[in-house]
Every structure is written in structure tokens, then in C-alpha cells.
Image (cartoon, rainbow, N blue to C red; front, top):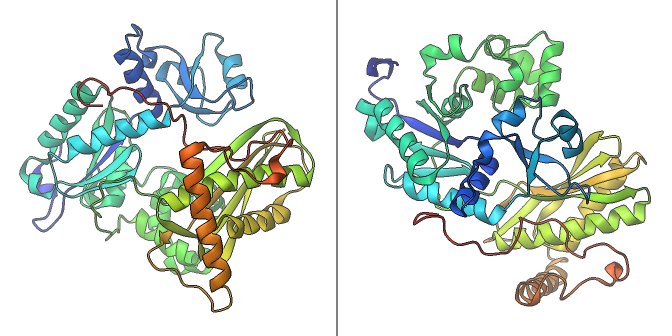
Length: 423
């Protein structure tokens, strides 16, 4: 445990709270509350979609399941080949949101500045606990376990970036620190792909320059990184050196950075027209959620997984920010036509990103009247579907097609009673 003198007097103290195997843990807590005697975290179990309908991708796995080599993202079929006793539970996103809300409510007892980074992650300004930052974090972690029923990692740093890195350290269910003096020992030896904001493509490019660890990236020529990776090169160079000046933005809602849906298809799609219908059904659902979030998008992304499990995606910028279903679909359609290589398709996905508030909509003079009519139509359709059901109003192209008019979504609309007196 580091002493307080590891922190300068003008440093902030930031906690990053990250729920361990959130979907599986939250499902386990729900089942225990409903009277189940076995904690599914203690047996080989996973959270995943329907194997019968080929929605069989693993979203979370228990520690006993991971011991069989089962990983997040792999098909349930292959996981069951590794472990015949594997138990599969469906996701329940409504329950997960309630669990996330309960965590946020508890954290509010400790700090007025909390940023919900994702459904299972929060940043918290704990500068006022500077003299007892470690003791407070341990007590907080214990309360989360005792009162909410799930475990978490807490990373403690002087900025958000390092706090997030520390919360990813092993072992899990632990409090970790990563102050700048600890970076050469704790962070720099890690593989470069472990660094926040370094994806597979960036990691592959860095390795071509013999940059394999975070430490090698931190000591690399920043001008070379900028010349090869542009602004992203400077960003990941700063991240490797622990440089982050972003503030905690107080938010009492789940932040939305992007909105997306995907669907695993019950048969192999080989025809362009059929693939576009499926993409349209996904776009309908995504656009509804985008409007509900009071955001506009500036970039659309389409993803494809083949029947051989090859995965690729392609993005397309829009001419202006929008929440219009038809405009978003035009971008999705163009992106798909550019990316699809003609293989048999097992899974399709749609995402919208580069979100901004819909408070101000900038339209061109010629498009204004058309856009305004479309916006009113979309709003009316949303109201009808919310009141009478998603399939109460549908496009004629979906009639007798066998394709859902709105596919994907955020889980069941079924209501579940509150867990104990908290969830």
C-alpha cells in the first residue's frame, strides 16, 4: 500500500469503479433473490443469446467457465464443446440497468461528482478522501459486495485514464493504485494492446515499428507516431505516459457514446436485398433509441460476421447530424455495399456514433422542409410503436418477408420486482 506522500498536495484523487463480470454477476444476484440456491458464479456458466436461433454469442463467463478456456465473444456451440456442463442464461438488460442505478445511488453517498462511463463503470472524484483514500476505497468495495451482492475492482489514480487502467488490473475484486511513480513497474511492461484507446488495428501498426509494450510506446518518437497515426498517435502517446486532463462530468444517467444493434440470423443470408431488409430493421430500432436519447448522429457503422466467423466493419460519415431513420439507413446501405464481399452472412450489426445533442439541428435551406416532415413522421411512428407495440406500424417491405420490422433492442420489456430493498 502506498503512503499518502505518493500524492502531491495539488493532485486529485479519482476512483474508477468497475463491476467484475457485470452481466453474469447481476444475473447471479437476481437469481439468488428469486430463491435460487446455487450461485451461478461458482459453476461453469455464461450469459449469452439463444443457441437454437443462432444468437449464441457469449457476453460474460464465470471464473469456473473461464478455466475451460471459454471466452467472451465466442459462440456458445464451441464453448459447450469445451465444457459439456456449461449452463447458459439469457441477458436481461432492464435488470442490468437497475443494478447499475443501484451502484450509482450508493456512490452518491460518497461524492457529488460521479460520471457514469458505461453501464458497469463509474468515475468518482474522491479528492476529499485524500488522507484516507485507500481505507475509503476498501470500505466502499465492501459495501458494494455486502449491500448490492456483486464484486468490483476500484482503481485509484490522480486522473481518469490511469484510474481506468488500474481498475483493469488483476486480481479482480481488489483495490489497485497506479500513481505516476508506479507506471514503469505496473503499466509499462504490459502489451501495447492493453492500453486504453489502442485497438487491434493500432496495435498491429505499432508492432510494425517494434513497439510491443506500453513502455516502448511511452518512449517512442511522438513525431513518428503522429506521422503514421495522425492525431490518434499523439493521443495514445499521451495515454502511455499517463497524461490525461479530462474532467469528471457529473451525470446521473448512463452516458451514450454510441447506439447499436446486431442480430444473428437463423439462416445464411446470401442475397443483397435480404441483407438490406435486415439492416433496415436494425436501423429502425437504433433510430428509435437515438431519438429517445435526444441525440443526433454524424457517423454510421455496419458490421458483418460471415458463416465462417470472419468479422469486418465499415463506417460512413453523414452529410449532417441527424436522427432521421431514412437518412441513417441510406448511410448504412452505402456502407454495406462498399464492405460486403459476397460471403454468406451469419450476423449483421448497425451502430450510430459521433453523437451530439438534438437541441440544435443545422439544416440546409433546401432540405429543411423535407427534414421537418420526416422528423414529425418519425416522432409519430415512435409514439404509436411505444403505445401499441413495435409491430403496430411497419414498412410494407417487411410484409410476408419473415423479417422482424424492428430487430435487435436492449432486452426484454418485462418488469422485474426490485432486489431486496435496494435493486
